[in-house]
Image 1: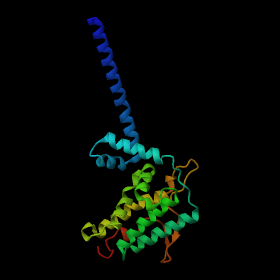
Image 2: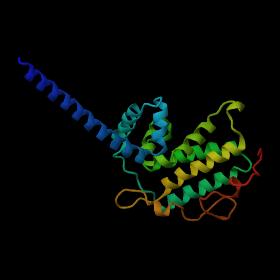
Image 3: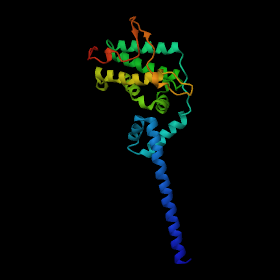
Image 4: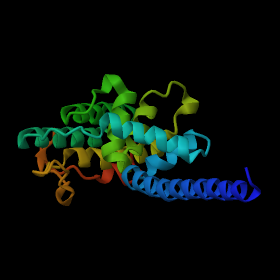
Amino acid sequence: MSTGLIIALIVIVAVAVVAAALILLARRPQGGRTLRRRFGPEYDRAVAQHDGDARAAERDLAERVKRHGSLRERPLEPAARDEYAARWGAVQERFVDSPQEAVAEADRLVAELAGARGFPDGERYEEQLDALSVHHGHHLHGYRRVHQATYATTAGADGGTEELRASMVEARALFEELLAPVREDGRQDTAGTAPAAASVPDGRSHRAHVPSVLTRRHAKGS
């Protein structure tokens, strides 16, 4: 084989390798941007869980999309939406006297609502989280916080009333998003996530917003 032919083959192989590398580099950022857009804070959490390995995190997130991306959320009847809104309002009112009990009930209520919308039930917490992260990744952190607070077993693991209040406020974002009506195309109607007014145990008209009990420092133990 002549020297000229060898050089030509080397050049061809080098060009092919460079071209393949450029294609991979062009594709990966696009996939990363798509996943980051879809998962929001969950993307950064996945990268941290994989010790900064973005490729491993993206493989994990892509696998979640593969498993749960086709899930279509079941709509709630208006009466069911009002009932969930009333129950959330009652939980927020209970926070004044029993912050820990209120947070535990909020955890159960979000899990129940997610199950009613077609996600895996709360008994399969990790699977439920994975599915929720695909469709509601931007508002999942609060649910994690109330769940962790619920199962904290020692006083040292308890962040106190302010930590519980903050977790409730964050969890409300996911709760309201799950409570939102579903449009005909199967997507959430995010233009109107606030539920209709509902009656709570004290007889007052109440919307599922954050009442003063979660925004002022007068809960017992604060």
